[in-house]
Image (tube, rainbow, N blue to C red; front, side, top):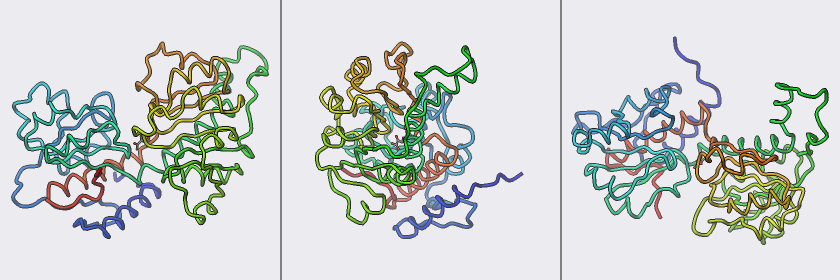
Length: 367
Ligand SMILES: O=C(O)C(=O)CO
């Protein structure tokens, strides 16, 4: 029986179709339901192999395999390690999801036919792009399609933390007392001030959502957005991050990780935040000095933290962040939905096929 495709998936897909139509990639959509990537040149007789690394505990989730296997043979990284001599000459593309695979000199040297490394996700801080490029290998990512689900997880974390949703669930499950304790009282999100650090595409989506929660929105960004953008989401620019930290009830970090943003939030910055405020991080763990965060939470310098990203990921079970009250830690699930992951995989396939066809991929990352 055919599976029904959600309207959201169709919407995102049509966005990709129109984007690709405008780009130089020879891309045909035979129907709204069928995703037909560019055909491979006739010179390539066999399905090119990709060395695919993990998205789940045992390789790529089953539901995403058909889309990849239409064009590629998937070799799990563990399989590759066991039979390097069988696969090394065949692998043309590597798919990675975040830091699940270290694409280092050794791996690049072991794959002489490699043409492209495609990252499932927008952030490529875990990839040494100059090194990869020096092997004549292109790097691609999956921008745009991650924006909504990542913004959603930011809002989810803010709401769950402010409204103590996990405590409520645990009370329902265990109700060891008749009433919820006073400490379980949450805080309103509506009417509160949200400070967004990093107003790129995802930050903007967060602002859009926060606007409908009647939040006051401040933002700090390297470059100020246009007045039109600011008006569209009711966001007020703070040239200095300090101002945003001092005024916000919720501070959400949405910057990408770079040498410039590495441990951007440390002891000094946390001390600028209100004692009643909450830090939410949906960017990369290393943007926050985690030891400083633990210290600030222990000393009640800030009230709470809600993190989709940490270092390492996942945190070891005995990490102090996991035993602190008022802390929510997720294992980096910003894009971990059926719909977004499906679109990301499709886009990874499109990018890698373009490279193997000698065409410009739509999402090449250049530095
Ligand atoms: O797209 C990415 O890089 C993400 O980490 C989304 O959570």
